Amino acid sequence: MNTVTVAEDPVDALLRDGLKNLWYAVCPSHFVAERPISLRRLGKKIALWRDAAGAVHALQDRCPHRGAPLSQGVVLGDRLACPYHGVEVRCDGVVTKVPGSPGCKLEGARAALSFHVREAFGTIFLYNSDFNIDTALPLNMPDELTSPEYSNFLCYAEWRGDYRYALDNVMDPMHGTFLHKQSHSMAEGESTAKFQIRATDTGFVFEKTGQRGVNFDWTEWASTGIQWLRLEIPYPKTGGPGGNFAIIGCVTPIDGNTTAVFFWRCRKVSGWQRDVWRFLYRNRLEARHWTVLEQDRVMLEQMEPDASQHETLYAHDMGVVRLRRHLRSLADSQIKAQATAQPRIAA
Image (cartoon, rainbow, N blue to C red; front, side):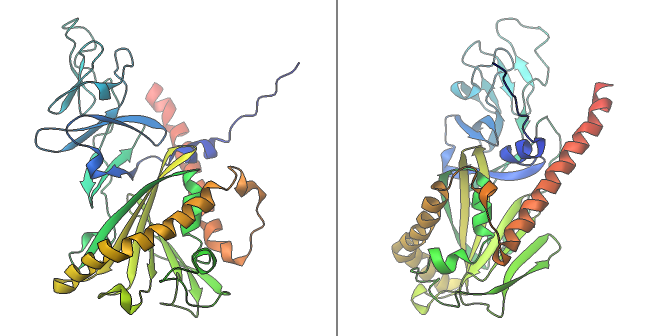
């Protein structure tokens, strides 16, 4: 019997685990407390812990000695001591101590994969690289998260399925008119629309023409050291004070079959209005928002893994097509750059 092996498309393989040299949201801040934890993200198993000052550090969850999980070890400030043989690994990947064989060649070697980490907006962000680097790109997020004029809440969930379907979902404003038509914030507007794509300095906007501030009318995709999505949904008066309701989204592959989704729900409010909106959100609005997210989750989780191979797309899908092509182009460029660099590294 002959066995036929089909090689995986290298672009798909890279995109499955996430583009390199970018920041990704990996978990809410409260996931990492006193003891180290192990998370699978971006196709890797990662150990995260806090030092005595509360700063978060991250290493690949694999001891360079025998591959044991560092996350099962002991925190020694900016180091983890492997539980298997006591090997101590610093947050920059350097082995500082081998108790069983002092002075061996492993001591002093940068033998573990380390990651740059940032903590902001109630979230831990990690820079995705396959080798140790000394400097990462700046982590830049939009005004809705960085400006004191806004207040925000993080909604975090884990969905079954490829993270790219979650990206497609946000790049498809028209689904709000149908899937979320019972929502208090997405019940208005026309059920037909024309769309256009508008370039920005950091990405592009996919928007309805002739309708703004009525429903889920536009989505922005941007890359600023991290890839994020932005949209606005008008609020009825019952939603309390403040401007339109903005959502900033990031999605991170856990593996090929699971996705971590981060949606910061933001509103431009200050003073007493800020307090009123935060009270209303916790007591009334949050449950409604989770209902909308659940509609998305159920729909995406029921789609077959190869759904994108059996599509018949039309004009409303221009944003999805634009983003898919752009991500494939970025992945192809990274693969070519890696191939060019390999001979120099080997030399």
